[in-house]
Length: 493
Ligand SMILES: [Cu+2]
Image (cartoon, rainbow, N blue to C red; front, side, top):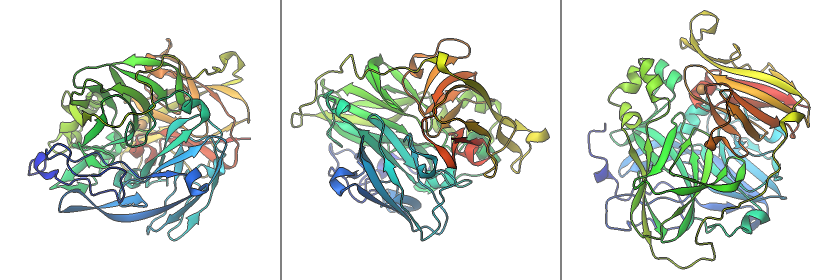
């Protein structure tokens, strides 16, 4: 624990983002930071040109305690980018760091050479100019660094942001859509602080368990307070943590409606009381604040916490980083509903969202099997003593692991050793067919790009994006596992 109380340090804690759509003054006179809202860059309003500058800076998560951080167009995290289906958007990403970086458009269905994976390195001083064709349904996506070997540290220090795709179909549903008012991006991250300054833990246990922290940040603010209107509000939940899996619910156990997974809107809204969100996953939910009561979004223990205990993780279980992972529930952020100007959005969640033609598993032409390996000793040994690999092979930039035919449908059976691992596959959306040989879980539905596996999970995947000049990646989204070799690459041609 830091040597001083957290609460007393939060006054003015919203200094981190250079521009916000909402004043940062304390709403209720409490000492909590208000929720910062990342600035919105709408591609249409910018003539379909978006400029991002990758930069180093100082962020005071706590007043008078600057930390060394990274951000896009700011010192920590980046603006929310909004693009429309059917448009072509020109990006210019300038790297002003002294290290290589990349920007991966996580969830965007675009060809391999535009994907921003480890092969699209932006050297210090260079600018990368991809034109992104947006040809997919409305969704909450995620952009972040994906430079091999440094992904975990660069994301931990702040290189991540939200990317929104919109379309006519989504706008026709009357969902809450006033950015920063009743439509809130919430990037949830756990981070480790010492005396109010961000620290970057390292070592063998970190490679095993991923970097975790005792403090939860939302949009870069520790445990903030969000002022929301006393009506239906849409939360776009983004797990931007390196390794932590959240089990999210409300402190009063109120139910909410889950309306979108990584790939976009579901066919029907699903009423839930809690929702699991693994690193790299996103979920959109509708929450009714009409009763005006203050309520908190809280999380239960990490689904991997008990396994990490069995690994004897001293670093994890010690006083510095154990608290957040093991307390029964901890607060992510608080909501203070208050009357605000009326909107045209609907008052309650719709039952039906968007129809979707589900891919037919009978059309799958091939089955592949991926085992995410985590082991010690033998052929699996690596520098840190803990070896990360897929199908026994640690990641190699020079090796193509799988070759897929463009337009084909396949079933990939993915399982993970020791922990629950969030598998992310670039360039595709997929459906979960079976989990552990049974029907998928309620939370497995929808078009997905990242899903938790331990028991074998069958994914039905259609490969519609070419990756011939540069391959796509598949990897564990526990970023330290990815950096340590739990990643493979495939071509589509
Ligand atoms: Cu993993």
